[in-house]
Length: 176
Image (cartoon, rainbow, N blue to C red; front, top):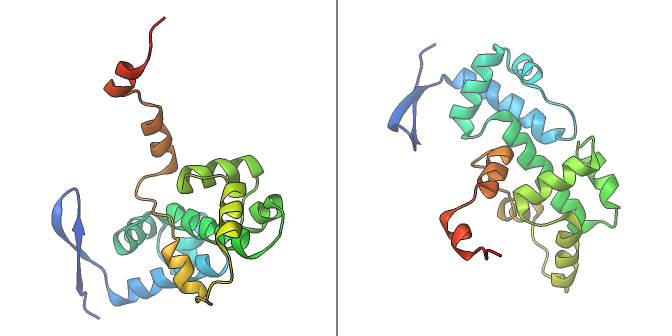
């Protein structure tokens, strides 16, 4: 079976070819589908690699090349998407939503949710309820795609960037 080139635009290196066979792409999609179906479960790279029948390093590298995100960030995106949907469509307590979407700690859920969406879960629920006035039915896939968080940088990188003082913050800071 031959190898077919897949070309993807890489921000860092310009246009660079990534060669992935259709068989590997099917295996990666199998792992991605499993994460989508059970995003509340733990999905370490070792488990995903086992589902894909490839080594851990090869899986992690190939997944990022194929989908543009590392597996962990993809899983975070799906969990936050699901949490937003539950906040919008149910009256479940935020604690139950956190645990049902795969978080082990309410604090970690709240902090990560806020880092990714820019809002607290309670604020998202309040805004959704205020905005809901009998909207026309919209398919769930369209809503989740429109509200999908974009994780181009890791959550820890975002935190570091927010903590780094800028020249403007020094100029606007009043000295006693």
